[in-house]
Image (tube, rainbow, N blue to C red):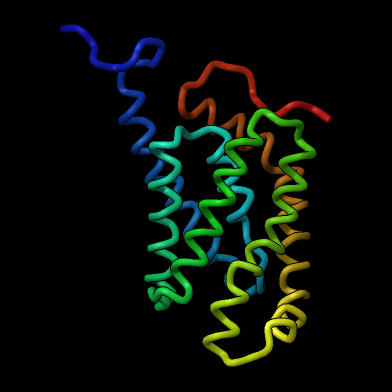
Length: 183
């Protein structure tokens, strides 16, 4: 019986990607809740950048959307004020991450660190409207948390991203060279 998979793809790779996507979503959610007691310290940015470097768009986007839905649902914040900025921010992260997948490692590390600030900015306007506070006061109060997130992202992307990209590639059965270039 002829295979219906795309040329160059091993048979069953779609099922493998779907199954692994479910497991990766579980890892994403579990690590965030394991680190919940430490404000803005998480592995979410690094993991989504790993996923962006390896997964096809057809798996990456649904995984990202599912993560945002689950995160909002579990935290009891499934409303437009939190959901829309969070979804937009995480989709921006993976889109830029996908574009940087073959760039030098320092570019991915800098994007990961910058995203620590960008993520907070996505919430600034909705939060100032909701809380009736001055935008600059909100940004000033959020700045220390953004620094913590940016620092965490810098370290985790610098040290964990390359080996996890290689690991995920091997789990998916990819044989091509790791796209992360040495510095």
